[in-house]
Image 1 (cartoon, rainbow, N blue to C red):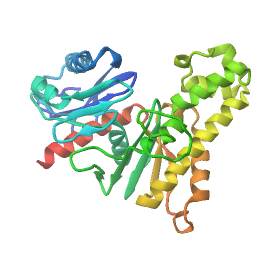
Image 2: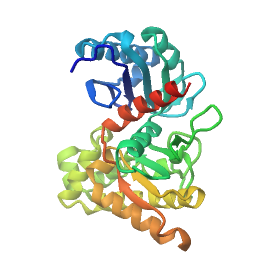
Image 3: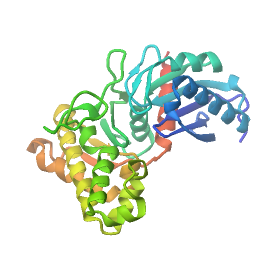
Length: 327
């Protein structure tokens, strides 16, 4: 597809283990994409360099002149300084105070809009996916952590100069488990994929999850979403119970969200949900419906995300376009 004289919008999703870039024309037709491993623990300077070279290679492979870039949107985990395009902290990557927006703007000569990665994903689901025509859509994405995002009447819900909706760092239990903050008993400490995997490793070590122990061992780095789903499929009841308990915790978080915002759509997404969609969505839905105030019970739906890996790149590109064209 020729891109001559077209405005090109580029979306970038910076995940905990991968980065994905995709370019789109004005009708949201994809012009090209490129994926790489994040290698976040190498440091932010190396990480920003990998982001820039990934974009450069995408443009080169897709034969897109950099001068046709109308804007870059990049979704990043953790809180974002929205005014400066700065990553404030990413506990799961080990990056702090990274001037990402300025670096990209200087290199590519176009506006670079930095936003939270789950905000980007929820915005894409609102425009193109499972939350179309919603007045208020809230996303809860369990993974290495638990991310949250909200689109309210077409706008990403953001704070005064900083991203918000850190659902994973809200307290929903009296336990002493820690996650990425000093607060204990958070949604992330109880219901992230990492938290489930840690408990599953214990079950495997004790002999309560024989399939998991035999096929994946007790190395936490090997117990990813697919391994958990595989163990449940092959009869490890202890692992299934761990997932159900985690989903109940997410369900309680959804109750709090419903009581605060009364959204009409709750979106569950991420690799963990994709691996066990029916079990997770049903458990979260049932827990939330059973515990909200009666007046809210029939006013919201709980659905799975539709766009998969495309959500982050489409959402960040679309948000960049919205911000640039509004100026």
